[in-house]
Length: 205
Image 1: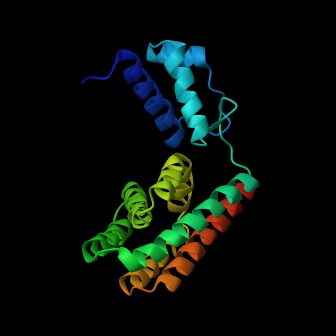
Image 2 (image 1 turned 90 degrees about the horizontal axis):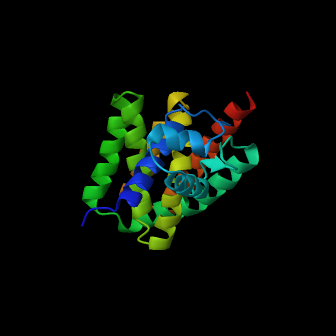
């Protein structure tokens, strides 16, 4: 069954605005004007309004402006990630099968060899493989709803070359392959704390 026109308009509007934010064409603090966006996309204001509402739920927009995260915002988001992704790494050490562990290693190799775009993709795959290993749909859904705002932070640590980023991925992988849940959880938590500290340092500049 094909999508209804209104649903297609909503999806295309949502993807258009989201992608403009994620690729930096709408910088932080940019005010989004419904009328202007509707005219640009050739749609009514309704799908634009729905798209903005969803992007607000995802954390990319606040009061119709592209989010400009504060230090508190960063800390709050990373606290959730540290808890959930740390636990997911513990689960991965217990439950991840050998083929998926190999995919984890392949993502690290791809990130080391590729340009920034490939490193971004491989970084996302690394974390997603571990999150899926939690086998907890509620936890996976929480992280999934944060993916857009997480993307912005992931982009920051890749573009600005956070030191030891991929070395830490390798250590997490090794702990998972060794079925050491305590170590995998601690390494993931330390890894995300380092991401937070790096992002906070850039925010202050």
